[in-house]
Length: 199
Image: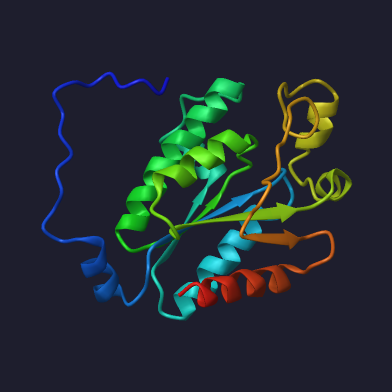
């Protein structure tokens, strides 16, 4: 799915660069990549961080896994190949947002380490922040308002991460948020402090 079909194409650089946009916005663009099991708190933290950044006068936007599958990636399922393509596409979108000077917060299970590493490789050094939203399977199941884990255990949802499909946690993320023990407010504050520290 990732092979290039188009030929005779050239990347066109504009006359305005990333530094110009960052000066205009008064911030550095960055992709904050939240990864973790379904129910770990990724979307809740992403929304809270976005709101906090907007209150501070920053340009931020959440790219959420479910939302992306309503449009851009609606033709993809949950096979390993489709999961890889899902993350590849969103990585390309996040790269564009980052180049535009936005703080983009992604909220995807993104279960495969190689896929997340491929997104990191798209970005210039320092413009990708990987955050493990860490919660035990038991905790995630207890938060499962959609009943997805129950359906997965009943065999109604095939290839469900954590039940019938693997999750590969990051080996060296920039930040770990332990949502087994931390409140949403504590996790949000930790992530905001990291972004402040990194400028």
